[in-house]
Image (cartoon, rainbow, N blue to C red; front, side):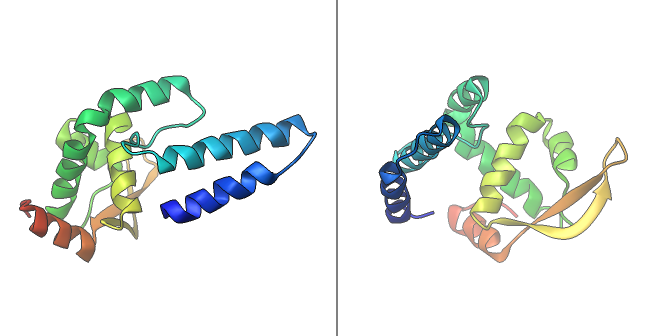
Length: 146
C-alpha cells in the first residue's frame, strides 16, 4: 500500500467516533498499523498482536534483507518451485525465519504460489512457491546467482 493511501486511511480512521470499546480498540490498532507503515525501517513480517513476535522481528531486522535475498536465490534454483518446508530444510532455517522472508517476496511479487500442492513430512498439503519474472529480474539486477 502506498504511503499516500496509508495516510488517507489513517486520517479517515481518526475521524471515527464510537462508544463501543471493542470498535475503538480495533480502530486504534488499525491506526497504529498505518503509522507503522509510514515509518522508515519497518520490521519484518510478524504477528502484530504479539509482543514476543515484534521483539523477534526487531532482533532479526538487521539481517532480514540478506536472508530474504538468500531465500529468493534458493527458490530461483528450483524450476519446479519449493514448499516452505522444503526451503527451510535446504537452508537449515527455522520456519519462523523462512516464512517472513517468503511472505515478503510474495508481497513484492518476486515469488508466487504455483497452484501446485505437495505433501509435507506430516502428510499435509503445502503450496509450492516459484520465482516470478520480476524476481528473476531483481536477482539479475542485484548480481544474484540463478
